[in-house]
Image 1 (cartoon, rainbow, N blue to C red):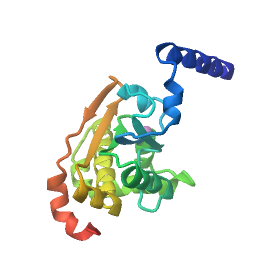
Image 2 (image 1 turned 90 degrees about the vertical axis):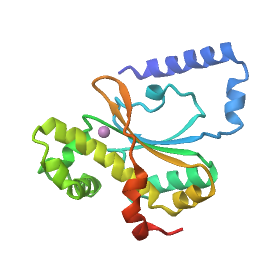
Image 3 (image 1 turned 90 degrees about the horizontal axis):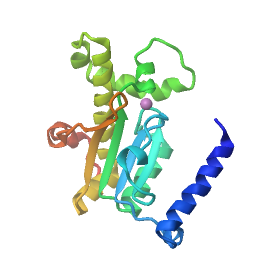
Length: 208
Ligand code: CO
């Protein structure tokens, strides 16, 4: 890729924005008040803003391999806490995607060095849902279902945090599990029934 083109693209983008609104960047500089926190995969095909059609300032974004929310990862936990406690977002979205390399790697018997502890979190999701997953004979379908179940478990990880439990008590606050289908471009709401999932486990994870 020609990196010079990136700076040219940037100049064109500035011109385009200013031609519509000459105060565009002055207003951007005043601050942000996004209503959504999006946590997605680092995969270059899953672009966050572009696939949602949102503008700068509208969505707070965090991306990592396989859209994970490990409770010991200071990076994602900092993003989540800042978004919920200070930006006061109303929605947190976990957006997974089919054909996720991270999820696929977690299905292989392979030593991936420093990635092992990260991907272990996905193996734990498999173990939690082993009965359902093992019953799916088709490998691709099983892999796609693991992507969905991983999204669901990361949503549950979000609800385990004190910041989110507090926000849920104090205001309208929602957690959503979505999947982006790379093959069709479609964004799918998994419509996860959190009431049902949380009913049996909140007595364990309640901290606020
Ligand atoms: Co991915």
